[in-house]
Length: 402
Image (cartoon, rainbow, N blue to C red):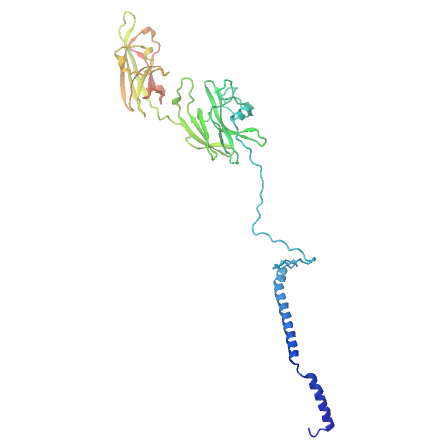
């Protein structure tokens, strides 16, 4: 540096002094200002990065939907009002389908009183073909029980009320009758109301033309069934009421009609009856007396072929042949009689499978004999007479021996 021109050295020194003063490092204040600027720049960078990361999935979803819209992000804290240009968010579809409630009109109430039924005009199911013309079925005004007027009438049986067809409303069951001479045709009928409140007929539950001869009682159940008490015989004239076999049968509404759902479907042979077989019938006459009457001996044989024991045996119409002698009348046991069986003598019974011979001594007027016959009758221990399983072998014609 000693070789440098002193003037040049002075210039270099002046230049260095000026330059160093301009580039000198900052003091503490300058350092703090520099650090603050760096922190602000970093915060801006972090905020921008967060915004980008939050918007990116939304933009991606919009791209997948291909609708160009960006849903508004979920709000937290105080709600904000979207700018006017922003479209309202579209509500999402529920995960479960909504339940649509439809209101249908309630079924008419078919509970009908006896007075209402008697006051109305109704159409009935058809009566049996052999029924008289008075047994009408169209536009019928029912008669009260015990009425002396001819035509269809209500029986003296309680009305039944239940939901027969499962529509949630009650229907009515009534027993309707129509006189057929000494007996009556009967049918159990279900009634309802239409939408205008008029009484209408649903259908016949059961009738006497359907393999049975009588309907004696009826009842309904809470689950819509109809129970009918039916019989194989309708007592009338001289027919005892105890002869009838009674059964309870159950019916249900199905496919627009009533069908039997429970109970016996036929009567079959009456288990209370047996088969008595009477044979013989030869009448041997002795010489005539001064009055023209002749003593006679009548021989009969009786078998009980079963299946029921007979408590007592009755012989009917012997008195049409002749008067029984005092000696033979002792075999006839005391009894009340007057049972419409025509029995002259009632004696001890026969067990099933037993056979017995009988001899009767009679005083006979030959001129009064007109195709005489004898009939055997089954009696129980209550003096009630019964039918026989085979009636034709209960009678023998009396033959006068030469």
